Image (tube, rainbow, N blue to C red):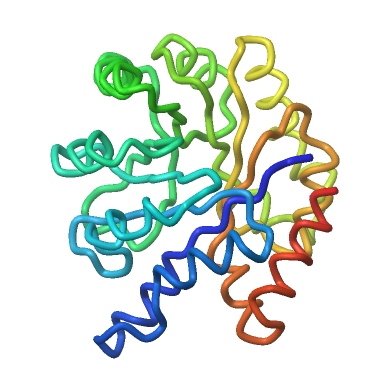
Length: 237
């Protein structure tokens, strides 16, 4: 079964809107894994507008399942990842002021840079993943960086799912086939939700993990966190 990693950034966004420690991000991470999540994802950004770097240090000792830290590989980000040693680091090409992740790596232009960073993380026994779009050439070049996995950027799928889901998912199927051929593990994330997740999971060969935050935390406001996580897990069976 495809693993569900819950991105808890939005819980930190709500906390930061008021200051203080309500809702408690650490407690949320503990509860997510208690309620069945098979991974916890955080994405600290330079301005710490949601997950703070201290959150990352606080959460790590409490995680008994997989811990995934994603973000742009700035010097500070690299230092934090190397000191914490999560299960997985996902490299995202976000500029510092980006509202959310909205593009994948150009693995041709950035191949040398990614090789160096991935080699550094591998020396610390940290699994690596590269956030990427569905272009087969970019995926083939991702394999040359030495990364263990790629994470498919699924916003285009989510945005067009209700218009023509068969046509919309086709590039993702081809991307997955390419990844499988070149020996890359396959993750996916961005705007997956209870409406579009099952179809994606059923049609993408070799999908190992999905990272879901905004939709899942939003659903939890209405449905409760435990119930929501269980609903997403059912979509992945």
